[in-house]
Image 1 (cartoon, one colour):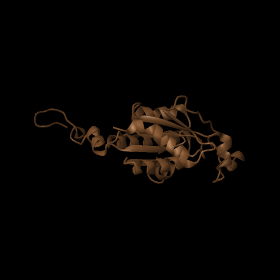
Image 2 (tube, rainbow, N blue to C red; image 1 turned 180 degrees about the vertical axis):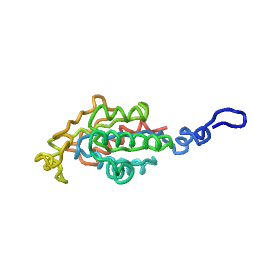
Image 3 (cartoon, helix red, strand yellow; image 1 turned 120 degrees about the vertical axis):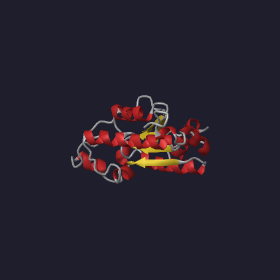
Image 4 (cartoon, rainbow, N blue to C red; image 1 turned 90 degrees about the vertical axis):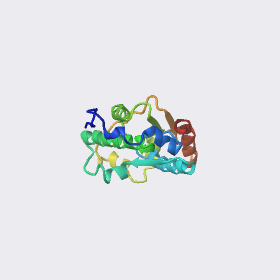
Length: 201
């Protein structure tokens, strides 16, 4: 698009900048990308973190499999192609929240280095905070309240991460939380404390 002086411009040159929105909200917008096995505590901790952020004056948006696959990604299955597209869309939406000055808390298994790096490239390495919820497979199976691991063990759920599909643990996450023998509050407060320096202005 061109103005009267034949200078190219875009609507993005006219909208309120991310910096101004961050100053307005008194926070640095970041994408908190929580990864870990099913049952590791990702979503539980993401919900705790969202509340903790709000209680301390920070504005955030939580994305996880339930609210994303019920709408934005409702048409996607669990093939490798669909899983990749699922993460791509999530990363693009996260980037929109990021540009709006909002802290985006994401909770997704995202089991491989490749798929997490895909998200990191879209979002930007400076704004992508990888959080590894480090809970062992044995512990996750003990917590198996939905019976997913039991079904996967007998082949009722194909390509289940940790059983018939690999999980590649982050090699150098920005934050690592080990949840075994810890309460939700203990793990959540540890996560908030480690995150705080990265979101404070």
